[in-house]
Amino acid sequence: HSVLTQPPSVSGAPGQRVTISCSGNSSNIGNNGVTWYQQLPGKSPKVLIYYDDRRPSGGSDRFSGSKSGASASLAISGLQSEDEADYYCGAWDDGLNGPIFGGGTKLTVL
Amino acid sequence: QITLKESGPTLVRPTQTLTLTCSVSGFSMSAFGMGVGWIRQPPGKALQWLAIIYWDNDVRYNPFLKTKLTITKDTSKNHILLTLTNMDPMDTATYFCARTVTTGSFDYWGPGTLVTVSS
Image 1 (cartoon, rainbow over the protein chains, first blue to last red):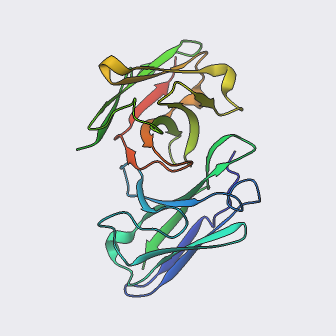
Image 2 (image 1 turned 180 degrees about the vertical axis):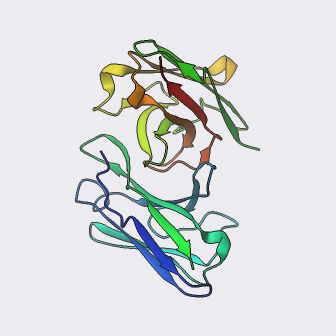
Image 3 (image 1 turned 45 degrees about the vertical axis):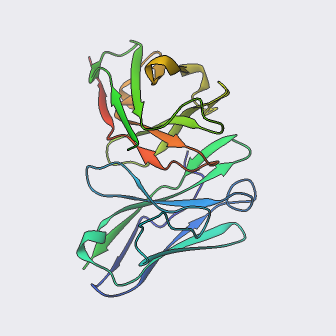
């Protein structure tokens, strides 16, 4: 029941910049903060961005978030091989009265 | 250091009830605004939120699974328990517990525990 829509996959060469989109509606992204998670293979998710565009303490500045209306984006600059992972967006949904996640985007570094 | 760790059976039979335990350390479950949630991930699939219990015992359930779930906490043991009834092979997943202090965001996660439902 993923309510947030993400592209299934994105790819880029080392050093390039890629963006991952996350589309929702006025009940979730349009009215609440967006969190971006990185999930490396076999690991648990890790917060990259919270409150739309804030990085956790110690987080890499190669990752940045933005939001406009009911859509959000995660940008990854200076791609590295270790960035290969699944990326999820998340937000509180006022209708669900709980958090929801996107379907996930698999990043491949060519 | 904030840590969470899931534990419970790794194999359950269809129709059985599953109880998972999340053991937390490094923060107080009684602190204002604190919450612990359960999220699951079927193999190769996306994350799905299940339930959250807050510092004041307020609970939220995914409405699509509400009849199947019960979340409780034992503050004295720093445990959060999740019970799922009438397990089905489609409930096969890695189950994570995670801390939340802001609406919709989980900042610390356990490593997860894989639960397989099979006869």
